[in-house]
Length: 425
Ligand SMILES: Cc1cc2nc3c(=O)[nH]c(=O)nc-3n(C[C@H](O)[C@H](O)[C@H](O)COP(=O)(O)OP(=O)(O)OC[C@H]3O[C@@H](n4cnc5c(N)ncnc54)[C@H](O)[C@@H]3O)c2cc1C
Image (tube, rainbow, N blue to C red; front, side, top):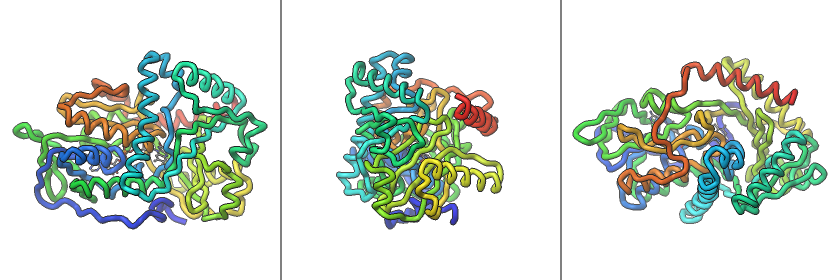
């Protein structure tokens, strides 16, 4: 057992992209080789706009290659809450965008025949408490009446086993429009597609400084530099010191995953009969799903200051999996890994352009597998239209999060509080 992610271990053969040496010119330089950056590049190249993607590690080595691969509709929170906050018309636009995000991914996969096990069987959101199921029923009514969205079905407790072979939950709801995929293979596929369209991707190439010179942007890397007309920074939860305004507006939160050995198809069909992407309504949520090679991929939150603490986190997650599915008690855990999920203060993704001209998108929470490709496309279209961007998630200014440098401690405290709420509420 090691910290190699199961997705990396089971990935398609990948193209090695070189590290940047020397100077290169392009129209748009993109920092970050995850879904956001690759999609921005892909949609710019479609219009023959020359892009360079700089990736500090390898394509997908941030969250895009390590996530649960749950391609979900919607956002953190309920659409009722967002409608109360922004009004019903904005909520409608937000919802439409979230569905289109998954359609977009499906379309890219079909167009380029990306082998990433894309399965659009919907998702199951499991109710951890009876009151959570009541909330889901209200949301279903709201979605049907106000957003004309009829794809949600409520599963009562006595029918739970049509979705999950467990007694752990009190029913839940299905949304038929969600999907799941092999997250790294999707990222590698989009990288290949944009490279075929002429993009230059440089791996193991960290952008270390951005300079503005004669109306151009110059991005310095350890052994070279890129001179471009426009810059996009999409480093999400992996933002370092490159751009302080962006760094200080994103809250990185760690999430960990484990995966079993490959099991029998019969067992996996029994555990999750409809092969949906599953997550639950616990404050410290679990998310899990079958993989194409019949493993259980199971995730939850986890951050630890020491290796011992980290081992305990993985053990706790394993126990969590066995609480949900005692049937897996003899299944070996082949892989365990983690990564950083980016959040914003509003718990919604941010997209926009800063006063210095930098385009950005980040903070998808646990919904970036769907939304990051879409926001990459929106950035691309904004660049092609002189910065014009009409999007419900657009923000005019990025406000730094107070006490940002203390966020790790704050997140630890919030998690402790949420765990407590899961027990007492
Ligand atoms: C364990 C885990 C499970 C998750 N599960 C789900 C899920 O099931 N469903 C879902 O929707 N979302 C999930 N997420 C979140 C989702 O993965 C992200 O929202 C999404 O991948 C964000 O994509 P991105 O391109 O914006 O960021 P990333 O994929 O993180 O890409 C940012 C990239 O920027 C690079 N970078 C940073 N600084 C520099 C620099 N200076 N120079 C060059 N490169 C740099 C990083 O190396 C990184 O590759 C999960 C995340 C984690 C960690």
